Length: 416
Image (cartoon, rainbow, N blue to C red; front, side, top):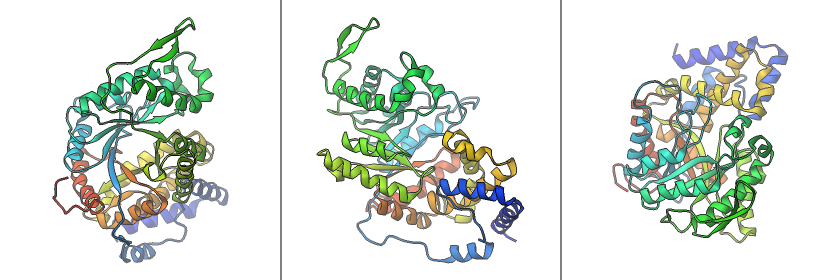
């Protein structure tokens, strides 16, 4: 019996052992996350599905940009070399035609704790690379004074020769707001409005304008930031997930959008992307110039079955940590016992591997790229630091580059 068949049978046994109430909670939780419990899917059905020809590119004009995304590095790791994967991946992406690299802002948790300040790591990447756009993915603007954001990223812009960019986030966890200037807890409820206000202020400072801001005693002071950046405007994405309003507001200000597939269904993302482009058009911005970037877990490998087993443990652990951190999911998640949570995560993994992530061979992963093209995504941000070993991640980048080249009209091995 194959490992995959055994895994499927164990999952079926777990599902069969649930009470009707537990099964209802499980199915509702999965449905809310855009996943499905495997139900009657047995090993024979899975084998038949795998043997079917993968969906391949249907039109020569399909295009997609590819960037690398970092998010979940363990901040508790001891010893040297904590950032070696990030730096080596940046060098590889720079030499092989990837469009950008994203470094996040994370606080007070092991999960992602390697990344407390994206501008610091962006400065390191700037001096290692020549072409790659270097992006904060994201910087939580309500936690910072806009003057500091403008100053720090102007430094990155100069070090990189004009390759700095940010995605702005409003923040989600109240604990993070102890870092916010002033009374962070009072500011937390209006964090989204503060984010858009900060974007406007940062762009004015970036352009060299003098901006009136309050001193400590409340009196006005006119400030102008230095150093002067190289780019006339800072490229800005807005990090958006659940709310169509955020997509719409991003379109109204002419920003790009950074989103993901972990906590929303592709059909919902299609509607949000359409609302975003409609908002751009109504505000006088070119709809086609706006970019929708989707973060997707990524590991490409020559053999699909081997890839499945290599990523099963790391990705399941990632999903467990991610879902446990989501306030909106906690009420459903908490109704499940440990065994039921394991069952839910096993079902989520299978669904995610098959349809919602770039996991497997380049041929298999073309299916998801075509789906993303259909729903209006312009770029996939490939999250690669979700727990696999460094050597495997770097080797997997070679196969990811093969997939990328199919969408950029480049032959295998050709330099950008």
